[in-house]
Image 1 (cartoon, rainbow, N blue to C red):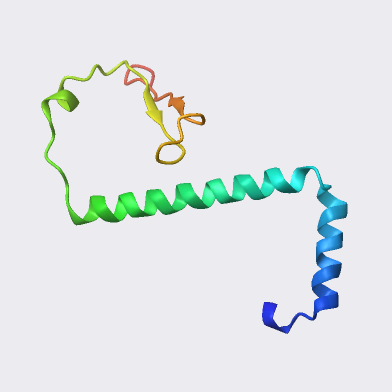
Image 2: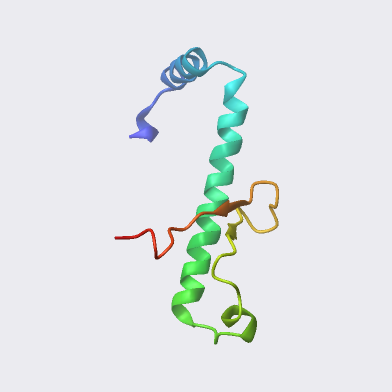
Length: 94
């Protein structure tokens, strides 16, 4: 389907996208799309490795406090977008 587009049609699509979103938002959208693709790729790779083998639990994982919030990183080495994850307590669940 994309191979059937002529250069004039592609140019028209680009102009419509520029009119809809504006030139200022397009770099941010492309950046977030790239970041999302990296996250998806790293998570798929981690899931594949996790499915192949399950590492034995270490003593630090067993002694970790239950009330401490976990942190999820957006991409390997990207500490600027890490955020704590709130999990429901067992006492608040029905």
